Image (cartoon, rainbow, N blue to C red; front, side, top):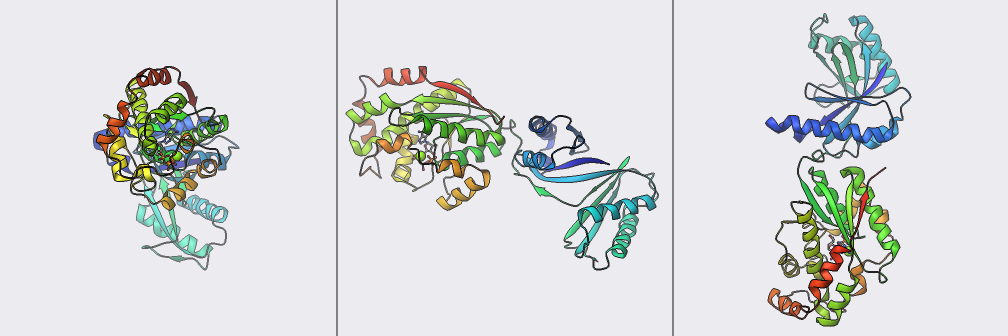
Length: 394
Ligand code: ATP
Ligand code: MG
């Protein structure tokens, strides 16, 4: 007996001539991810399906966990493969499978047989009936329900027989690498890792940038961002993270500009620098964790003032989410516990007591004129001294 997984995927099935591209990207993701779990996994594409064959003595839990992190996978079906013989042998194999996987089964079920190899002497429908009867005999309390069965038993008759009855959910979305690259503004908070995950889920490769302000923000705050990027990279693949020293820029803004505008002006400089790196990396957009109205710097007026300096599209996948929904998602993807560690991020040090909630773009631009003397040099220095770290899940 060989153990395998059948990988079910959704949207990529409907992409017409791109289908091959998508399937190849998914198979590649599966291969790379399982290589980290252990040796001996083989992945093959066959008639619009992807199959994984597992090595002897493999760690099923680790394999499933790894597969559940791969965008593009909708369902993971553990499959048992038996040598194909005659109907009598098949009947025994099915009952042995049921005893092992669903001992004492007493619910409703349906057999869904598919005869792909036509030399088998029964049609698909005859096989359904034949195996259904065998199950009813073997499990006296089981019942057939062809419309809403609790258990769907799939039996594919090919060169061998594939048996499966469980679908473990995958994350859905599109395989990484099928939709270009974007630059994520990643802070240590709850929102931005979730925003990155959502964009990654659409097949986009992520770069990231983090602004820190030593000594106002600690090494531990930076480490937290690295840890968050690592969790996200389990789904998205390696992330190149730039760590920008933002202290001098912040201090200069603090010295020159009205304090109630600090956050907005700071955010505008973050966007400018992020955009610089995005262009350098040929990223097709920026990604932030902003959500309308969540804080003073995320009112419609503030978002407009922040967006004013950007020329690349800014993707804000959480824009309409309530905080609770974002928290639920961050728990689901595994970033929440790290996000809530209590290390300050650079914005909290310089926040004004009463920040403007309805900034006027014209006024903000005028305030920024007060920075003319030194700001270009400071921005250039921040860009030149940025640290580049490759983050990956291994
Ligand atoms: P988060 O939970 O993602 O930190 P937030 O609710 O704290 O978000 P803000 O501090 O207003 O909101 O930041 C809005 C967005 O700006 C963040 O989601 C993130 O994309 C980006 N951002 C904020 N601070 C930083 C930083 N220090 N480095 C990189 N990006 C940042
Ligand atoms: Mg934050």
